[in-house]
Length: 214
Image 1 (cartoon, rainbow, N blue to C red):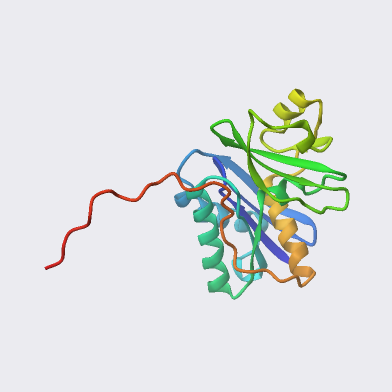
Image 2: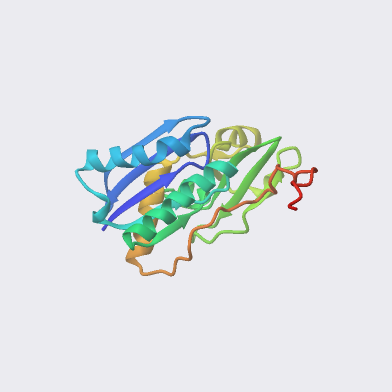
């Protein structure tokens, strides 16, 4: 089963193709902006590198965050569009699931949310997860952390709290593709992907009224 994984939840544009657990092509390009223009050309390049086409897909995995608001909308919209055009399922995968992929044992995934805050979710040794939440780095307690930590803030938190940092074993889009492939093979229910927002949007409603129609 060929599965595409895409992610623009942070300052990058990432895509990967996997088939039966084998990685056919994968690429991550760091970028602070421009993901909307780069994502689909990158996907085309991944297909060409693997010698496959979109028609070969069995499923589309997409990172749903939490992360950058605009970035999440870009990749989720792209996945929904591909799913509709190809009549294939689109499967949302959180950054927590993706970072945990391939790591055994209890684990806390902690991702930078800026403003001295972080996105945190912990998993037990059976893979059961607690509630994902936004936490303050100034008040974070060691009791909230497993012995192993990973994520974009994993090394910093491990050093500060005496934990063991574990680097994610694969690139994020590769993990998303593997997880989506497994969910598709298990015939699990997958609702339409939607961005996972743990923080309210920064944008405020416009104070000025719109033009009056006469």
